[in-house]
Length: 203
Image (cartoon, rainbow, N blue to C red; front, side):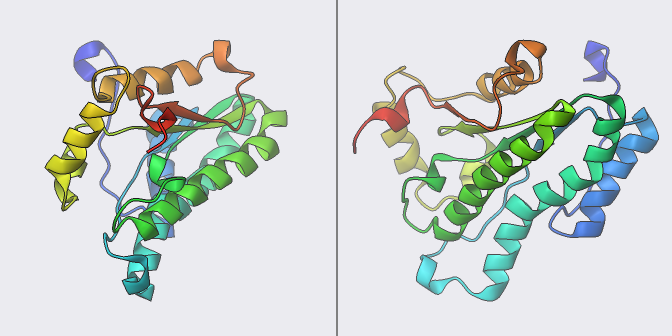
């Protein structure tokens, strides 16, 4: 990012812990003077049948994926209100609405993200703080290495995506950036599918 002329810092944090999620926001405030855009993109989870999920697996997954967004936004909103402008972008997945093997607790956490985004959107829009959610399709990143059926999942998505290719991180980043512009200011509380049409097919 700095090579492109932007100022950036890397902060290591376990966002499933409230104090670390809050400290992450505070570090940005201390370094840059505020927070204009909050992107909730942290993801983790336990891949098991839902009937085998114990308390630890549930709390780990939901805290990192969903609760961290709530805590982070709560910490960032005062600075956005002070500035009179803010954007919140959250990231979910098709697993919030469709059932995939051993994805149960992750899917539940993703559904929670979408609901949380809608509630944040309605509460914050009067302050010119706009919240929206992005739901990418299968994106080739290191996260896929944790899926037991990685190659099968990729092949299936490639064959069943009308656009003819999988989603790239650049596809997702461009939509996230656009949602932060004034051109998108009347898109409020929506979940935007970025999947090349994959979710449109009845399978």
